[in-house]
Image (cartoon, rainbow, N blue to C red; front, side, top):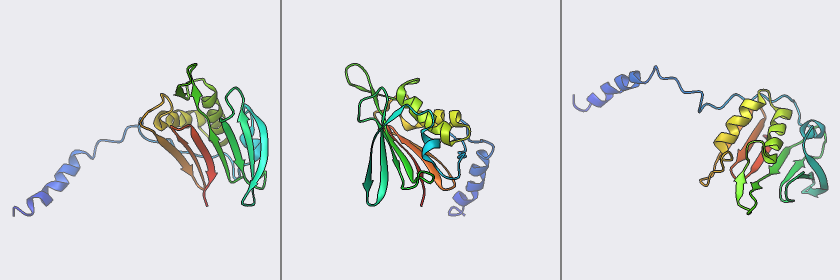
Amino acid sequence: MKKFLPLLLLPLLAACHKDQAPTNQDTAPKAEFTFKRMTVNDMLKNMPVKTEGVSEQKGVKHRRYSINGLPTENTIEIVGNMDEDLESIDGTCMEADAKGKKTGWPQGGICEKVFRQLATNSLKDADKITAYMLKHSGLQPLSDRGGYTAVQSGYYVLEVSSLGKFHLRRLR
């Protein structure tokens, strides 16, 4: 009987927590993308960027854009041979204070605006999803422990990390 006592207690312990629902605070909002295919025009709509150049890597076109108002290492790269069916949008953005110390993506800052616009151009309920992602990625405030978050729906995923890297990509 002593051997079976822990097994008999399991249902009782499980019943103690069955009424506790997960809190909305830590639950990722459901992502729903607004497009069937990513297009250059739709994704760059209202983005504060300027064209830097176009290159080809392994037969795939890469368009590089600098982010207005930030140093040149802050970029967006659009990957894909067809303007009407892109593979990914990859970005790097990190703001710094006057002394050069990284500050993450301050609320109302350029990096936040760029990411928020990408989300607006691609997601329903973009404000809610952006707020969740920035909080959980470690960018607002900047975390020294690192962080990452992603939302996915169908064949697409939007990701962001505390390094200031973000990606909207088609899964293969």
